[in-house]
Length: 303
Image (cartoon, rainbow, N blue to C red; front, side, top):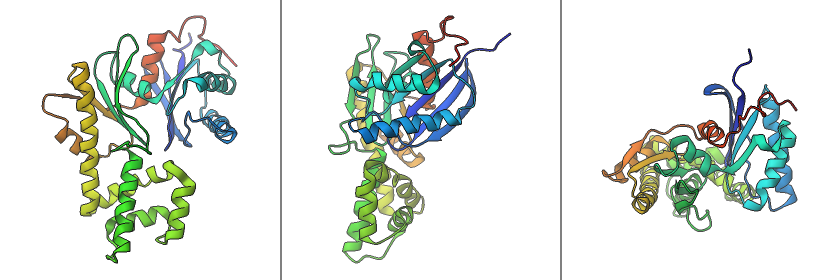
């Protein structure tokens, strides 16, 4: 007798990508992959998506029966292209694949429709609620050129700004600057400039752990950045919770380190009920169940 069909859940992000394989409700395996996003405006970006998905396929040891992908920055016009790439890469029929944005994936891991507010802090930041009619109510998520306060890019940029201003003023190198220079590999401006402007938002977002490490080392500026990040994320949660009239809030995303999470909890408001955080990848099984991706006709499909 064969076991339950397997599902591959993908969380494709601008700072990193993650995958997990499930058999029914049972977790089987997980892994990380290169950053991938739905910003497929150029041939280079599309080729990066092709290569990134091929890399994930090489790591996944078994053939999934269905696949759910949450893609950061997903643009509607590119969803069919991504679905086709997934179908070709993983040998699955289109009916066994569901492509959505990363917020929908994370929300579905924590809540049923209309059940709460998700505050997500990855490279960027957003508060998100999805109604039973599939309408989205949100705050934030306007991108790093406009806001995205509290997210990993914002944390990295704030830390780098402080460190460079201190250097301009001739201040001695503190824990924050030391952590950032170590992450970049240099303390010299030409190298920092190349790291930031060649690497783009993902490179800056990857500096957030260095800011967190400096905060753990009692750097006051780094600690202030952690507190401010938590305050900004709590603000987003309060806005959407007030709009939808629901008091349940969950926090998710890699930018929610313990210090940011503590500040978030302290500022989100006593009237809101915090729901335990779980992996956004668990949204894959939840969506597969609700969408019927494991219909009998799809079970046992082979490439």
